[in-house]
Length: 154
Image (cartoon, rainbow, N blue to C red):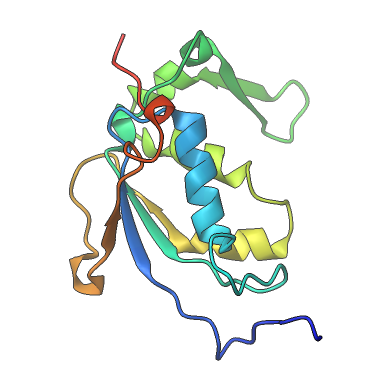
């Protein structure tokens, strides 16, 4: 037997739309990262971008469990004393709430060139509208996969 290895000609990419309203952030990010990487496909090849294009809508309505809304995202400017931080709540209520979902998905992928390329297949929108209707995306119902995926607003 020989091990199957996908080539660029073998890869078939689909478009998937996921509604993040009421979905727990970590569970959403895990599902999105799996779809982006292509691990749900039988012909998964680790060194190829064989995942789907994923559109996440309603990113501003994502839920966080426990005290995670008060946890910080940290980054450094590169200058001495240049550490910066914002809470997830500040980001979700601010101008760019989709960055919380993007960061969560990015951190669930391996830190290499392939994952940076894969992140180009992710589109996250704060509202319910997206400009990708021409691609005819399939709807993936994350809430129906597991009862723990959703959480009521607190």
